[in-house]
Image (cartoon, rainbow, N blue to C red; front, side, top):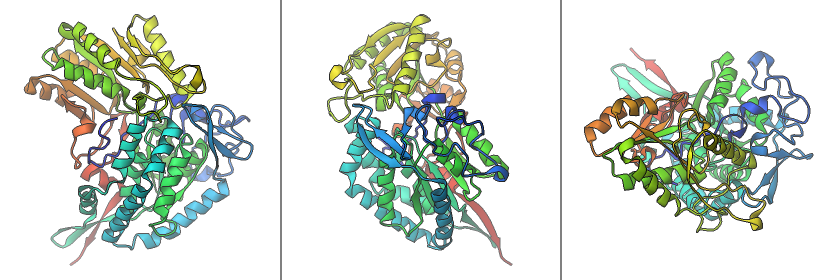
Length: 530
């Protein structure tokens, strides 16, 4: 993975593919139609007037059509499995409707006291939480590898960067919450109340921290709903913070997508913060609309990389492969479309193929493996379908790695795959892939065409431009419709801690991180005196 946050409090920007391949634990679009073994016809997102926590889809015995194929057994437990081996890790009890009501009531009561705690004291408590998390780094790393298959080196990076006390980050939090006086008017930051955090599976610790820290610092209380794919990682994180924070300030809900849907629809939830697919984000907006509930959504991406004829091709090819394969390609801001100027196209293909051949696929617990399993068989099939579609429509297979054999028959491994001659008629260039695929296309080398191709998507999360001409790079970057553009680099790796992480178009609604992002978790209030 990248240098994980690179001391910039982004803590990860992650989203999940469309429809049944969504990794977001709360409300995948496909689960709306069939969450249970019985037929569910109602929409689990409901307005205040129709809200019913006892809706018949709520954690009912789920044996199929769950997000990423997760099963709920007859004891109302999530069956938590290892994607590298197929072995059962644990069975995790789902939150019942009555329990969820209790969590929200407790959060409401606790927030009345928490909001009166000074900002400085809240931030100091959060720093202590970081120390407590650091003390359990090793079991957290192992749990992440077992639950979602991440290579252990990347899991260590995730944990290390998530638990380090970054003074500059906390300084930004404090600054964003400090009252501002203008003459006889003072603008203060007012907490929303109770925040529901829905976190994805691909960065199961870091993404919760990304949303929880500014929520808590702002005086909100938090209910965390981890992805059902990684329930134990989320539970360990919440239990650890509960050792430090006052009772009820942070709590945990577990279960199927119906639990997330019930949280979003509940009138006791004041802010919803989630990372997930654009389809899921739209459903959350629909559910939040009747109460004008605030939402912060980081959603999908289909990030382009432009390689101009004058680029450092060796660096560009290595970066293209590395950022296509990080976390087995299961990152919202993975490079998924690589456009190379025609005059250097052949050379770039050879360099990319050579770089990809150095990557080994296998169980993430083995440090020699840089690419782990897909999170599920559903995700593996999704990636395979895109690759087969591209090959059938004329894409060229440059490289496909080996994957573990029969001794790992329970695993969900997909080979590192490098394709050239990809075009906009292929799913690989129009839908999120979320897999270990390097997808390369040729363009005529002009700035106009580079911008057109980069913007030829409903998404607008990250992007990158490789050229030795600084002026040209800045001209192209200025016209790309994306929240982040890297020039000769991957933007997430090098952007400053002060910068927000933003999704343009259908990649975001609201934003997080940096000074601007911290402000999203509270609302301004002006106090005027005479």
